[in-house]
Image (cartoon, rainbow, N blue to C red; front, side):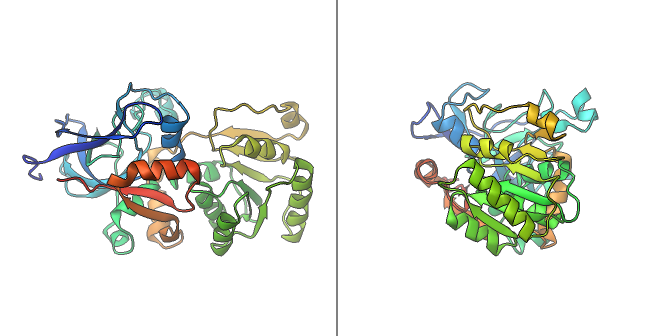
Length: 358
């Protein structure tokens, strides 16, 4: 066990929406029998964090609260088989015992713990979490990627992996990914790896160019286009790609009202619409379209920890590259990064790296 006697716990705590996070020092927490103490290597900045901080989305734990749920680090106290091991902390930590967990739906376990929501999160020097579902990182991965960068596995990559897998993509299917930011870009790449022909839709030429460089078959900037024009262009692109006219797999990952409106309006015969992005805004739709087109609508929440090793294997094998999509910042810059992320979303996923006095 690492000597933690002289270590402090440093946390960047949210005290009120839109207020600067405050750096607070305290004693390291004592861990229970089923817990591990993880020294944080990196913690990604997610749209969900910005929703809590900027948009007024309520956290389950009362403020002040340390945000952050995309966490990588090293176990410095806990069970022997994990001690000193680099790990990914799943963004959703289920109980592993309830009916939902037994049914393979552990991502919606009603006893789940989400760092940065149900308990203090990863914008900190350390975090104490249940150790049951910690995902070990193979040493070979660390020769290619810093452990801090692998924090993005814990949501930005695992979430789209679960939803693309659930959509049951077949070879040659048309996958339409709406929003190719920090999560959507991985959704597009994973759909491509699973055999789909992928169309990425966004309003940022920069993001679309990045998606194109990483194997997306076609891109469409929908900025300024009405729904009818977008639908006509999507049909034309499907024909150009020699993709099916029906059975489209649509992934709404932008988390915006226009994105969700577009996604629903792209539904055609035998389509599957998967909703990944989150917004507090409402969208008016005609649900009967699902009946008329014999289509299905899927909601998804995070990723069950049981799938994390599959995601790790994709990256370890070199099939999924992440280097160009991650940018590390010292954690002392967290307030600046939060403000910048709200003003103009980053093309790369910001990962905050602890630089506290420990």
